[in-house]
Image (cartoon, rainbow, N blue to C red):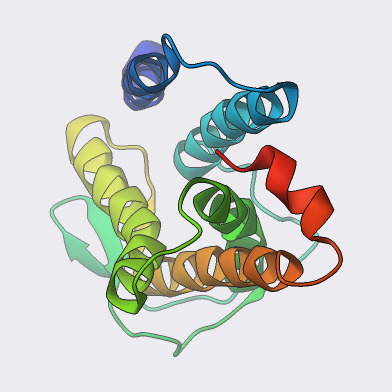
Length: 178
């Protein structure tokens, strides 16, 4: 595949993100701290999209050789938590900010909505990777462990901010809430 082919999923998702963001913020009257939330959220999601389609790898951590299955040319792992490595923990850290942004946008979710919204990013990322890999062969691995680790990251980020919002640190959290 050419360089243009492999950039297609990123540029498509980035443009979609921009359109959704513009649709949500157009005409809004945000305070300065809220603009920081909106702007940093957009930048974070752009980087997240880039990392999920064009990862740099972690050469300083030895990886595990997971036995993979194949759907056409797409490799996948459906054995949850059987081959946890450093990338599992990196994926948790990568999605903690998403949980923070989720709390800033929706601090009072029902338990069911909370669990669904925690799982959604991991499911969306892996689904998009599957489709993009089928379309332009990005050589990504669709991995159930990534769904689990992304879910844990969002869950953790949300809970950390929720707990912080119910302590004397609430004055640091509230101005950034949308």
